[in-house]
Length: 230
Image 1 (cartoon, rainbow, N blue to C red):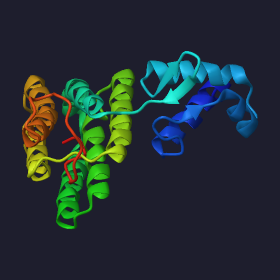
Image 2: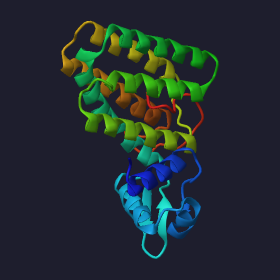
Image 3: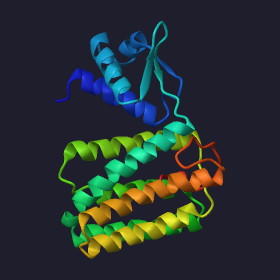
């Protein structure tokens, strides 16, 4: 059974992810105690963990505030995901079954359908599921947890602002096919890692070009399907 601190952490993280606690929201321990019937100590522990993982900011004389994710946070997060996600995909690739690869191809086809239907929310969910599936057999639960956590954080940012780069979504789907072809061909793990990493970096660079900024710089918000991290 999960500890009280773990329960508090999951309650708060879920609230941040589903928008119950929006960016800038002040998390008041006394209110949390009354709402959930859990004493203050586990809430304090969970807030320290949320701060360490980048979900909240503890401000002196103010308290714990849900972090406001800006465009620079998006670029940093996606660059981090490029590194850890690429590594996890490379480790996972030799262990993916034919059924899992077929599932990944199916997800990619559905992404094309979501593009045709102008359904960015569905596109984003499918894109996340595609990448988590490719990383799922990496054999390192800590690494996989980091990848999942970064996808969750980027999902929160995506809901706060849309990012755009003309044509990037279509290019991302094509790159997915290329990554799958490498895996199916039994390519060297270093080649798989490089392709998966570059795939995410391509999104950062495409958005930067669309905004006239240098690659990896903070990117203003815009509208479009390419919010979903490549």
